Length: 253
Picture 1 (tube, rainbow, N blue to C red):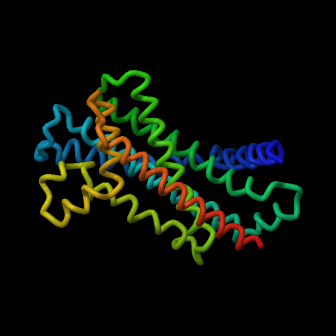
Picture 2: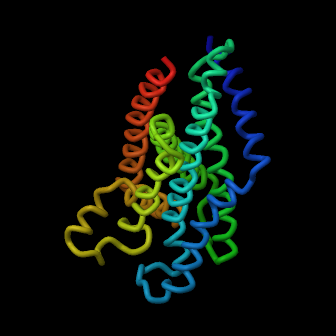
């Protein structure tokens, strides 16, 4: 059964990736907005923002990477919605295919597409002056956190993708996620914020994840931020996965 599931997922993943290869504008669009934010904040607002960092692009990049992921996962909901509307799910159900593989193929497609977008954004950041002394373990740790965050948000995206009544409804849920980094330590230190805003910023998942990635890039002690970041990512992933799979079963039953 596991071999059957893995083989079916690989075939369906190939199908989804071929669609993306024929329409690379998905990845380009996903990367454009975070890059625009990065250019705007570094070259327009950067000189007026005091972060205590030698390079504002170094300070900014972790938050931009999370915005890239939040922007990219909206396409997962969009593709799921279209497959449902076009009857693709019903067609697959009539074939000898492991049912979970249909959902997992979409999730893994999101992971691959988002990783490509993240590489593009990091490349632009390097051209803008981003530098890090992090070695291979540091980069692997950053990659691990970003992969976990991508999977968590992707499974979250599956839910509106399966339940939305319109294309706009399927992708609109990602907008709050895109702007969540703005109320965190992604762009400015939280101690510059007024009381209630600071309290929210310091206790929401983006701040812990940003601080953890920033510490890894700066080769600084990660403290409790890394464990808080992992706890948030794993917690969101588990809850989103459970709700998504329950929704999927009800949808295809």
